Length: 443
Image (tube, rainbow, N blue to C red; front, side, top):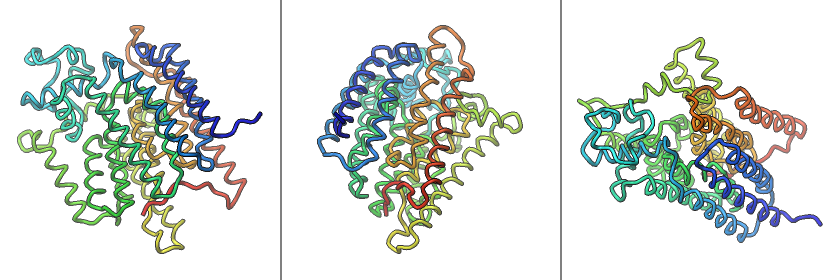
């Protein structure tokens, strides 16, 4: 008996629930055998579900059931404490410092002078010899959440609420673009959300929410809101700055000025003798390395600062190409000339990350909301092929120092992306005139 697509999704959703529940039971040993086995099973189920998502419309009950399942496995991770060296402990520390009147860009956590300021949740934060690297938007968010309740759990709840916000905005965008609502599950079912939002708790999901709101505002011609929320997303982390070409001629000069003013005001509380602080951002570019093969290869011939600039340039060029490509495809219709596609926002950030010095799994959270079309399949594959990098956390658990990933991890991660791209290219070249849709058009 052949299974209908709806029933396949229910089965795959159940597999995801069981696999991620088992994964949550082994969250304390990220990268360990049981964690990796269950997460790999969840990733396989997710990719099979992706295949079903890019088919004709499913009933609304499938969307509701899928979102309920996602909520259940999120609770499994939400109830767990984060890892001892997860970034969320730094978030609590930064928020605490701000509320006590200190500047997180200047205070070094390991300084004996501030020893008494630490709590049980901040005493063992990572990189204690460096001040905070997070931009002003992230800092103000830390302060706001810790003012309500100073704990990692409060921050994790806030991050999960951001994720729910993305779901609601995506549903609205899909409706506006006349796309099937079940495509929201391509976002909600991604295993990275459970691990890095409900489990570890990373600020990137706030930036992703602000960026999605910005794109939704563009769709509705709310240009001031689009510009301001884009500025706020950049003020959480600088990655989306490479999307600037996609806003060219879609927002007005006064909208840009308003966004710059808002972001500038956010930095006022942190000014140091009239200068904008960057904390440990320079040290990050100069000395932090993880899962960045392109950066590592080019580092032999160029300094880190130049390579960081190259990563930004690659993203800007990709965004410019995406915008021009979209315009060429829609040039025949005057009404479509100013439209932008959801998937346009994934590729520039992905290109920048490909050349970045550090690519942690949670960095891909920025891409997840925009993976609602088959054209983004290589990026979708990346969100699961990056799973083997968790083995480094297991090595840390065994007492080994943080270092380069095993070669096989890099081969698996980036090899899967390359193979997916090659297969897609060959399939399209073999079927001229039948290119897959690259996503909903948004005016």
